[in-house]
Length: 298
Image 1: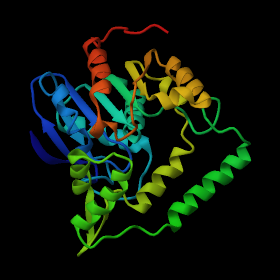
Image 2 (image 1 turned 30 degrees about the vertical axis):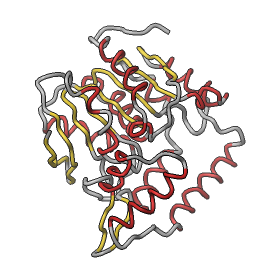
Image 3 (image 1 turned 180 degrees about the vertical axis):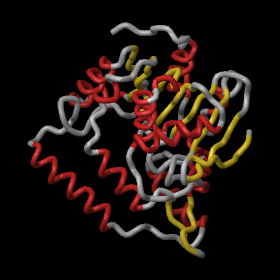
Image 4 (image 1 turned 135 degrees about the vertical axis):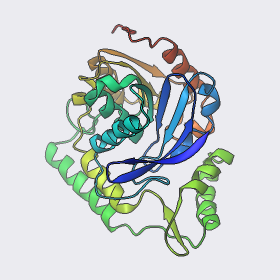
């Protein structure tokens, strides 16, 4: 295992590379996450695949330009990263934001993606594959207020890494979602933006940039272009919600080779650090069938 930085365009991305002479899997974390979310997942895959864990731009130890928040830009980062690593193709596993970036990667660079796993990108916010039930005008008002709230929200600042971690420990322990993996994730995420002042690595301007484009994103335009096998993963709560259930079942049908699997007990997105056994079993079964041929029939 090696930690190092890769120059992609004008920025550098931090990666953790479990080098093997086998097919690679690129892991892309959720918004506000970092490559440490995968540490409990690594043992499931490291004997059979080369694992490449990535801090997306504006996250973790990667550079933080805070100028671009579009998933297409982040997907282009991954393409350049693959070029630098001399990887022709890779499997991609993404959670939430990472699933959206992986979806963009598969849609726009089909020759680069062997298969795609999406723990996220389950529905659009608006439109025929969306979950918004009121008028378009009300949706635009909601989005404007949401972005305005982010813009006006003061960042949480801490005097030390320990104080930063302790703050989030108190919150997560109340929900029974704290363990050593979550602690390591927050320890890694603490970003010293000025001497003696720490905050989360995904900062306010980067979040605002991402959310501004997120509400305009129509995932149906991406799924309809994906040629590789796609595994969409959801939890039981998504399946019980009528609008979300309908949207995700319809979205996966747009992909040439897609399947939706509901993982019992799955907690999105922190389940990767809490209890990933079930979801990893589903992914491993999926990966064993990806040989470049059609896997699924609708």
